[in-house]
Length: 214
Image 1 (cartoon, rainbow, N blue to C red):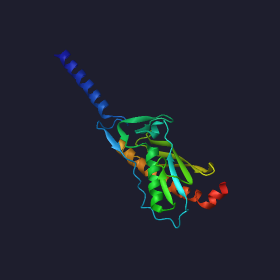
Image 2 (image 1 turned 180 degrees about the vertical axis):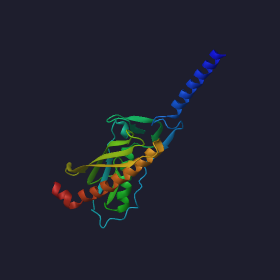
Image 3 (image 1 turned 90 degrees about the vertical axis):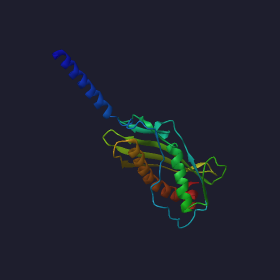
Image 4 (image 1 turned 60 degrees about the vertical axis):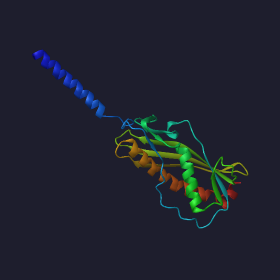
């Protein structure tokens, strides 16, 4: 009986360890159900600009091969390392989605004669190129931080000269440490980036700025 009791205790101990391992799920595997998220612009309703630049703007996303700019929702446990949430994805690449949100904001503000995404067969005087450098859940410290960094280039299409180049970065706290909270926080950080990016685009694409760049 003593030997049998020891075997039972050993089995129960192993089961307890296994249960603990299952409960302490890492960031990236917090749910067994597939979920798809959409980057949402949480900014206030855009107010019309005081006047239009009269320019036609084309917004072009520049997708990269980085996991940050993919359909995967990326997270990081260590500096310069990335992994993807196992059961969570975006409904569009961050670069493509952010380009659409920029178009939506600028169109609502009517600060340009027209605003359109590249590849729609519409011409333009100025082109805004957008690249996503960072778009991930920094989980080095729990629950972590959402980090977004976008590089922007404004180009005069008539002269093919660079008007201006700028990098925009923002962050937002993630709480709790799971995919849904990370997606929401990345949306908040994106909103901050959009606030600065839209103001910068309007200022740099003004006729006076274009003239000085030539």
